[in-house]
Length: 116
Image (cartoon, rainbow, N blue to C red):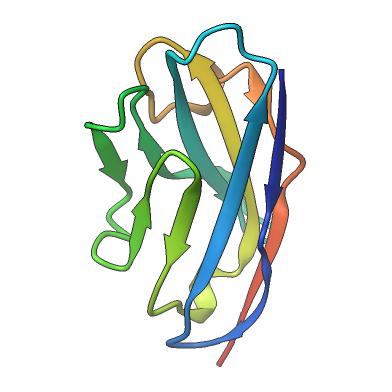
């Protein structure tokens, strides 16, 4: 299984960005996707996750109302300087989870930098 995250870059505060997560190698379509981020000097945290069927979505309080997720992308809107981080997509079979320890498959990360 391989994951490829892309779409990061430099964006001004208040702007938008779309992150892509391409997943390959799963023998089943029944896998959940999670997006996590790690800011400089901080631990990695959950941003959002989506169930295998796409019907169940979770958003961290810090991004609720600004970010949205589907099975292919994480949409960042009204970004803030505190959204600056390396963003990772991850995948797991079965139900979605907010815990990074539950995800065995990870992409390489894509840098998002928000200027004020």
